[in-house]
Length: 192
Ligand SMILES: CC(C)(COP(=O)(O)OP(=O)(O)OC[C@H]1O[C@@H](n2cnc3c(N)ncnc32)[C@H](O)[C@@H]1OP(=O)(O)O)[C@@H](O)C(=O)NCCC(=O)NCCS
Image (tube, rainbow, N blue to C red; front, side):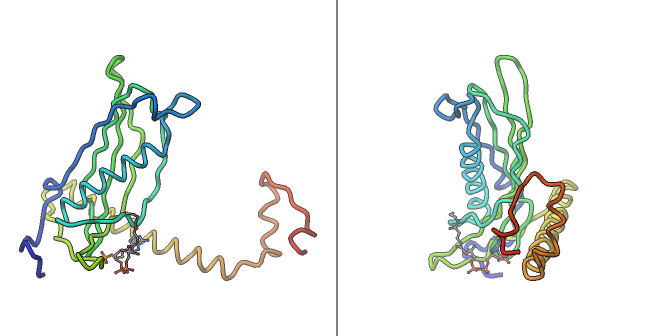
């Protein structure tokens, strides 16, 4: 490996990042809860900080996996975004992000979501650039790395399946699957 700074491996500890943000009224939607988009934007920010620290270079967001908002976040909550590198490829890094919302007045803490952002390091030529490997320091690091490999395999499999399904799908033969779904259609409109 030929890295400019000659650092071949970095630990997750080196780049682990937490950003804590106060949820102000302008972040709220009409229902008085915090917009999902605000939370996503802050997750992207913490993923960038964590990845660029590990890579020592500019990074871009390539993919975001499973963002489930488990609980609503309120105005006044202190929300912490904890990010760490779970897996490293050649130029890509999987950043795990855990979001915790804290109501300091009532002393309640809730886990609102966990997501995985794939970030890619780019060089001055704007091409993907090799990043340092990950030094696994404990059992948890190993568990996260192995889980990320599994996640990657599942994603590849899922994409393949979806593509196969798209090419194979004969709407006429699959229409029966809509029988118990909450939709209506007219056979004439779909050309049957
Ligand atoms: C993502 C991007 C860097 C890929 O560039 P490319 O020239 O096709 O390069 P590669 O195919 O070598 O992919 C680079 C890495 O990204 C990974 N990658 C590409 N698409 C991916 C996806 N959908 N999900 C996960 N990883 C992905 C590849 O596996 C590879 O990882 P590795 O180097 O660790 O093996 C390029 O398409 C890009 O710049 N996209 C725009 C990103 C952007 O603008 N984001 C939003 C604003 S920050």
